[in-house]
Length: 110
Image (cartoon, rainbow, N blue to C red; front, side):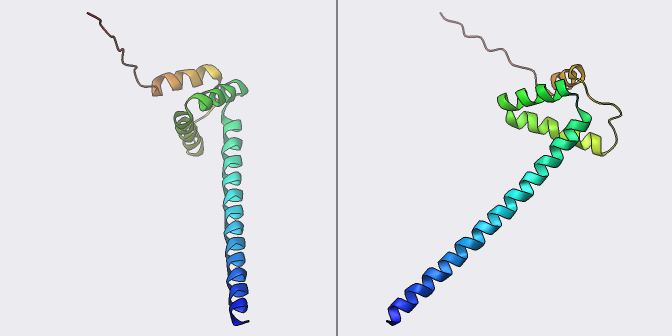
């Protein structure tokens, strides 16, 4: 009888612990979602639709690079250094400046 009460108490504590963890995860995902919505709102303000589409395609191919570009653009906008909306051609120029030179690799067979 005493063992059964202990087992029920352990189960109850485990259930409470799992519920608390789930609540924390839900809260964190909600914060992450709000952050991403704010980022997208800023990007909508500073990028033309064509530029946003190009950045979305770049994000598929090179996620880290695209996110770094987004972060830099957002920082420039928040600091007031961007006066106009960035169009597709301007974004292409920015990306060309940020993309490192590719090294040519040649293989010679003898």
